[in-house]
Length: 463
Image 1: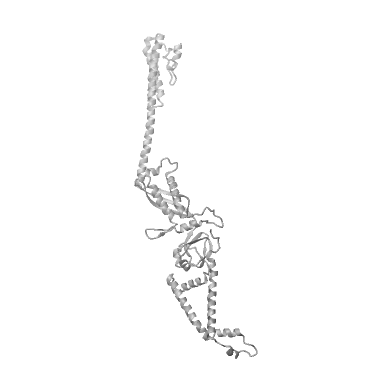
Image 2: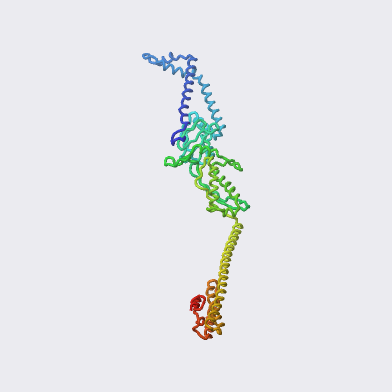
């Protein structure tokens, strides 16, 4: 479970335990001192009585302490003092050499902190580059005991004896002896942009894409609150802290760069499965091709980051997909040819339909002319005007031609002089007939059917 803000960690009991050691060493020194006093058998009572008032008895306590400070007793402490001084100097030199400290002052301060059980002010762990900060802090370079404070947007992973020890959340903590701060992780959401990613399609065409993605340490499903604005999972923090990759140049990449690296590799794999035309126009895709690729990349990246303790926020966005200039020009030409082909097909379909309608109109005109001739002959025979049969037939032909011309006018343009010429022929034939009141002799106005025309044939037969 996470430690509450401001509560010390397990190392907080270190100073209480360390306070026993000075008392123990002081007691041993006092026992040795008394042993030296007993060994020397110093008696200062006669000497002190000379300077003590005779009316008052000489206290034994004063005599005892005076005898402890006698030179014959103190000489036995010289080896202890010399040994302590030499041991302390050797310890300071060893610490300075072992931990590569700049001077003896830093080594003496570190030794004093070890002896005091990690006392002093808490070290605020807020430096983003922890490795560079270690050279300035013995506590970070060597380890505890010592107090530290973690900001509210950070989490710390510690080690002891080279193995994972615990996760420290925001607040104050006490490091145990030689508890080493291994990693300092940022709990805030991270946003990265990856420009100019070189991709190659299945047909060997190079394209360039830009990516944008957001992620953070897995929150464990806990919502953010005012008291805990950056929730996290301890398992996720531990997994992210140990997510490291040695790059070809020898540098070590951390969890912060892992999503970007996986996104670049995943996008290359996805694009390599498609030809360029398939990528630009995916078959049976209700969404745009770029969005389909984004969806697949997001699903793949989320599955890869989950074991590493990283939570992907939203979808991976392809902000730009650029083709090489020759390929772009070729696609423009291809689209132009495609649209021109569609236009010609549409035009050809319209022309074929018009020709079909003209053929139908021509067939109808032929039927109309034949009917007009037959009706003209029949009418001439009924009326007994066989002498003017030619004029009557000609009149019926003119009626049929005029009707055909008017029906064909929406399909194809007609000569402007066609209808006036037919009207003029009608008038000339009408003057040559003996009886202008007979059927077929009356001029027909444009657009009006003749009384003896095909449209009025049933009425004539009824007469």
